[in-house]
Image (cartoon, rainbow, N blue to C red; front, top):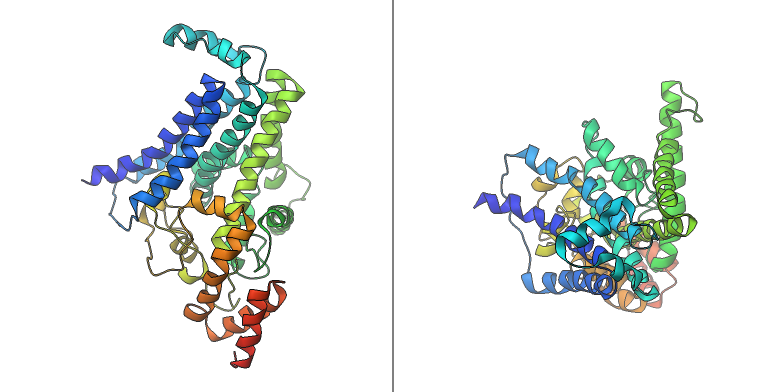
Length: 395
């Protein structure tokens, strides 16, 4: 039954095709498609339990090809989304598909109201995060494979975040769960503030990392060798294509989709490392990331869910990541945890006990001192009381 372990990752592509169909169908289908996909993830993860299987899969080429397929799939989804707000029938897609299916795509598009276009932004941004960022994350870790790096950077360009390939690989993985890491949210931070702070600090960090690399190689930071500049130009090219397709309003629509996709990445960063502390002298271990083994999330996100192993060994391909069921666990699957994170009172109610339990069960003696300091700085009474108690206990 090893074939099933190859096929299960194609559920990722099925989710993308569902989004594509909803965007082309227009009208209420767009909102229904968005609601269905979110509900599918939340209910599917709740009902399907955990996947802790660790099969040995030999067809590495097929597994990599599944990742590469994300680029044409995302391009198709974004094209359909841009087409849905254009006046022109780009490439004659509406007429051709209408003749093929008997469904009047052009009439449905013309009747699509503003609320459904808002759903289009939410759905497209979700796909940019799911298809683009998650796959780009996996591919840009493969620094030995130039094709995977190129595909990964183009996937990240849709969310204006090609710098992720620099800061995440060479910065985040080095400094995770420390104050030096832009992506690690300290205790008490609001998720919406984190999206802004992590974005700004992440871009600054990527520029500094790239500047040091160029200096070592004897190149000017203002040169074609600068991967930060080249990456932003890739994103600018996508905006220009959207502008050519339908003018400034369509380009603005695409930018909203991309920025929402970028914001989702920062929400994911928030929930993967919230409240964690690590002694910088201690190697990154599975206990320094929040993990989940929910089946649907794992199968449709190339095991991003197994984040504890990923941070312990960042070069391990997704199919070889271990579930680490004893690692600190999120409140649910990825979409479930995203929704919870975006409701700050609910997030803090559920996560504060988990973070304090992490201090007791996972933290080293030195990390308990760091945790006590983080508790005092959190601005939250539940953490500050615990910090005072930790000091009295001699931590």
